[in-house]
Image (cartoon, rainbow, N blue to C red; front, side, top):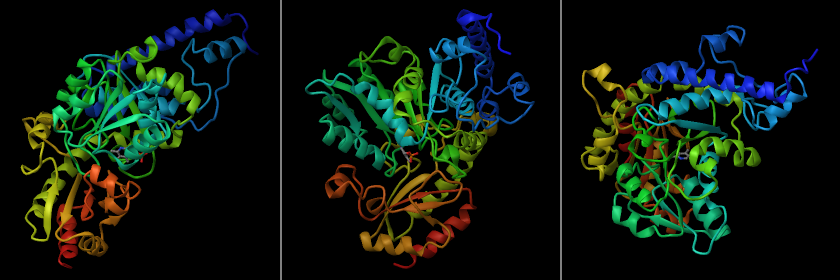
Length: 459
Ligand SMILES: *Cc1c(COP(=O)(O)O)cnc(C)c1O
């Protein structure tokens, strides 16, 4: 029996109470430490009691939500009350992930932050950038670091540039602030960077570039996949929007592909409607995301929620191991160059030291500690052939185009992630043929170094 007495207005009132309860949960969690947020998110005892008492966030694999009556349906579908409706539009399990991500990226940040979970890192990057390209005008351009993920390079260069005629202005050296400033003009729609970048682990100064972007009333979008909020939170440094491939360190088990758009409320832009400026992640979720359809599978959201609980500890441990491996490689005769933000020889090391800190590190170490993540890249002495010979010798380090794993993984970007870009694209992105990208996992660092040592001895 359904109740027809409430009316749409009754459901709107119920929705307001639901939203207030959620806001309360969020405000309670904002007073907690990073690890506590990562473990609990907004899934509290009250939420559990509404879910058969389950202490772990339930995985809602259902495609759709049932409504009490037509008024309830009307209120929900008109976005007049919190509801998830249909799993392409929203999903309760994806929602738990979104709330956790917003709290982690917003840790230590004064303002409000919202997040949108997506099917992959690439769909997150598309969702975060495409809304700024509406109402195309002659001369419309975007300014982006050329030192970015191979997929981003293709999305911007091919899909936006070659197919849609958008002028893609690549910044070759993201540490050169003049290059950013010179490329921006009155037709620029957004400024985009990635730090540390994949695969070169290049650093950029988020604070300085945010200043340049904001002076032109433009939003700064940062891909922070490699750092994770355990080591850097770009919103605190002035960025407007953060994108993630949650596939990587956030889901280190390797059980899921996923992505996220995390934005502070009140981004800097004069594009789009007020709602887009006020709460970008929510605007995208309610409209373009609904219509494009790149929602995360609730099963994948659950895998990410599960791995996120230990993010800070993992990033601490694997960063320490990576520092050891980087020092080992740096001193090896068959290695030309090692790129790792923790090395003094790395351009931008000073910026990395200023911005990459283990969150709440003082609670463990008595003082704040720098941690630089678990991605590094090294150039093998010689060329492409030598790099491949070393790569083919690995017996424990996996050969795969993957990173962020709890297992060590290596790839040669020139023949994998940066294969489609061609020589010109690789030159623009500064990806040499003899570069091996290495993600350090949770194995004992001695065993990782032993595998590298044996492989390098082939030369
Ligand atoms: C992997 C990756 C992406 C793309 O993410 P997917 O989940 O593979 O779509 C974007 N940015 C960076 C830095 C990445 O490493």
